[in-house]
Length: 219
Image (cartoon, rainbow, N blue to C red; front, side, top):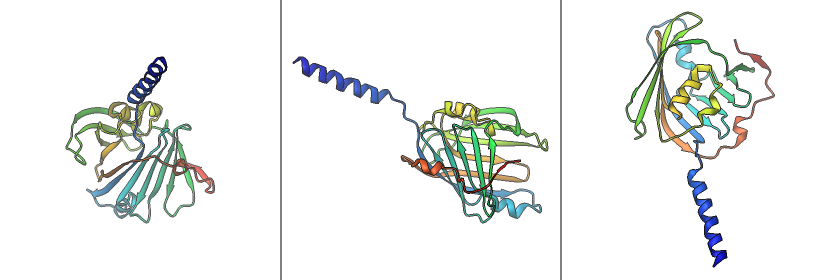
């Protein structure tokens, strides 16, 4: 009888531990990419091509991130973030160089943050955080909208030093990957909208840095 009680106690402890253990999202989200040109210029054709027509965003268990672009012959190939290094590695299509920059880099000034409700995405109730930003390069203002659901959780503490794009502020607020990202500039509007969410265990080789390519610091 005593052994039975001990066995039941062990099972109870294991069950409670599994129930209280935090579960964070690991997997890949596929987005449709839409680019709308508001003001035609000599760069319009390149801007239409640069970000492709679809994107896959891989979320690693340890905080590594990978964004791969599809449907374009020029422009961005992929962007790889290594959490331990707090460093981005960027590869452009047709360019045999791997560019890198620190996650501490911040090229914009945050003017305003607004939180609001959003429309459902993939049958999930969503909220929105809107950032009004000002470029430090040309002084132009633009808006970033992040639409998210509470159904997918991420460990925002892994990104507390990720200043690029104010990701540290965004992830601390949303605690979720975005299901829609809308970037509104004077000359262009870009929208990434989730089409498919796959919560799967990822092979860490997905986040492997290509050491065959020469590296150069991103301007």
